[in-house]
Length: 101
Ligand SMILES: [Zn+2]
Ligand SMILES: [Zn+2]
Image (cartoon, rainbow, N blue to C red; front, top):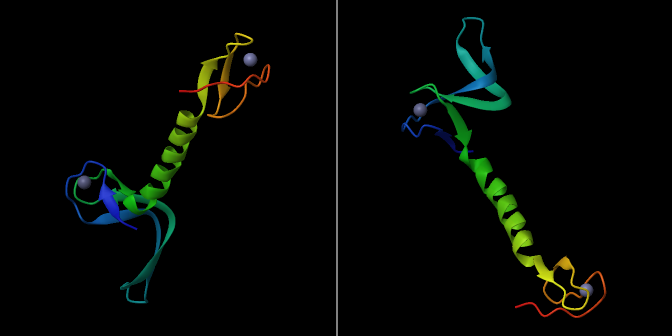
């Protein structure tokens, strides 16, 4: 986990929004557990995000991009239909070999 302020104010202290705090009989802090993810920057009050969770999201974006690049819209010269095919595939409409550049 790596928390960072969404306003990038440089604050390095964060407060969990949903945490259960344990205290002893004298009210001294003993420990806590975060019930739900969600943090506030203590410096400026903006929400904080967990950068540790970002690489996963970026990877998903990348996979979508790759899928968008590999599928191409081409006009089939045989049946004159716009078809979306992957490089090396035949026209799904008439089966003609398509030459993708
Ligand atoms: Zn901040
Ligand atoms: Zn075709």
